[in-house]
Length: 322
Image (cartoon, rainbow, N blue to C red; front, side):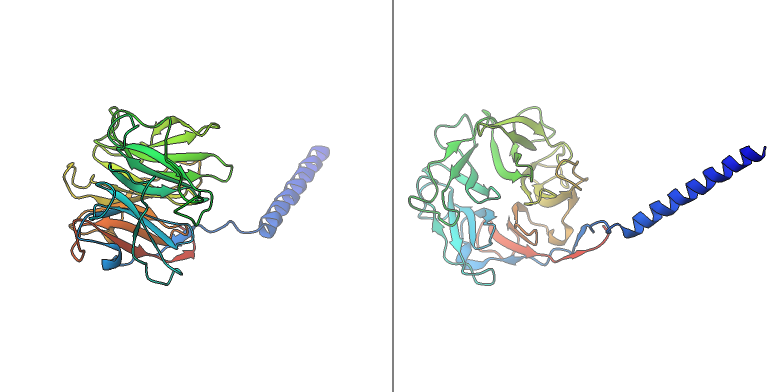
């Protein structure tokens, strides 16, 4: 009996030492990184008459350094019905300059709309109904050698048809994301049959040959209504898109919605409305800056100049528990 009691005592002592060691390791270990916490989006500001016109101005995108601003417009003097324009500024605190039409080979007598960029700035994706597609709007991509050049030999080259995602229906609203492992994903919206609503958000994985395959419906983001123009943050942890799910009508008010995820391979959270930006008007074609602190979007709300105008909202970041 005494030997049995002695073995129990030794085991208890060993367990106690183990627990003390684990506690000590926990105390010595560095604290887990705090999840980013954001303020509400600020009251949107219209980008004014330098950028906007009396026509439709929408589909914004901004370069990683925040010094080049792209959008499409139906203003007079373009190459086609909808053309992509660019505006520059000297610093992130300077005003935007007069927009310049990107001209050919980006723009054609057809429509070119809703540009988006790869994280390295070399590729621009956009939607167009130009000849050479397979039906409606299709996704196209153009490459440039120098990431600060839009024109000339080192600027945007002849766009290529994006292989693997286009259908005889309509594809638009591209957003290109590349994770730290080098895998690239193209998010876009399509009204092809088989979705949850009148337009759904899809994602496709880029293949070694540059084409895209394994197209999947991002069901966590979609609804039985209209969901489109998903902009993915550079770190892949946040998505903002436009949807009319609140009204449930194809012609109803379109608002901005967002979702997040803990990691780039994780599932998106349930989308929530960006209520700080919401009005009785429609807000659409959002684009999130590289640092996730600035959101550009189009809106037909009061205070603009035309059918649709470009607006901007900002937020600040701190660290803390979610």
